[in-house]
Length: 249
Image (cartoon, rainbow, N blue to C red; front, side, top):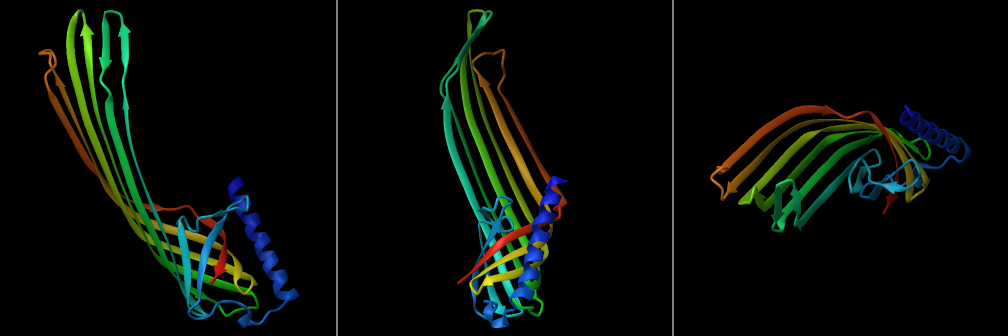
C-alpha cells in the first residue's frame, strides 16, 4: 500500500510540474528533440532519486522515427561462475569421518530484451503524451555440480563414500509490454518521463538432476538417481509506474 501511495505521489507531483511549466513557459514544438533520426539514452529514477535501470534493463535507448513515433528498447546480460572446495572432520559417539577437499562449481547466465513502438500525441509545448507496445523476451540458464568424498570410521570399520551430483535449469519467456506515459522537456536535450507499465509473459522451462553414490563397503550398494521435469505458465506482472530520465544525443 505504501509503494502505491509513493508512486501516486511521484506521478501527481510530476504531472503538476508539467502542467505548471506548460502554462508558465510555453515553448515551441521545435524546442524538443523529438525529431527524426535522434537517439536518446534512457534511465530509471528510483524513489530516492538515484538513476537505475529502465524497465528492468541494464542498457536502454530510444530512436525517433519521426516527431510522432519512436522505437525504444533495452537489453540485460548477466552471468556468473564460481568454484570452491572444503574439508570437514567430525566425531560423534563411535562414528568419525574426514573428507578430502570437496569440489563444487556453479555458473549461470541470463539475457532479457524489451522492444516497444511508441506513439506520441500532438505536442502541447514541452509536454508530450505517449503510448507504447511491443514484445519482451527472457532466457535464464544455470548449472551446479559437486564431488564430495569421505572416509567414515564406524565401530572400527572404515567406509569410503563418494557423492557426485549435478543439476541444470533452463527457462525461457516471451510476452508483451504495454505502457502509457508523459514526457516533459526541461531543455532540448533532457526530459523527464513517467510511464504506467503492464507486462504479460508466457514461461516454459526444464530442470534435471543427477546423483551418484559409491562406497567401498558392501553395506552400501552403489546407487544412481536421476530426475527431470518441465514447467509452463503465464505471468501477468503487477501494474507499476516508472519514473525516468531521457538524455538526447
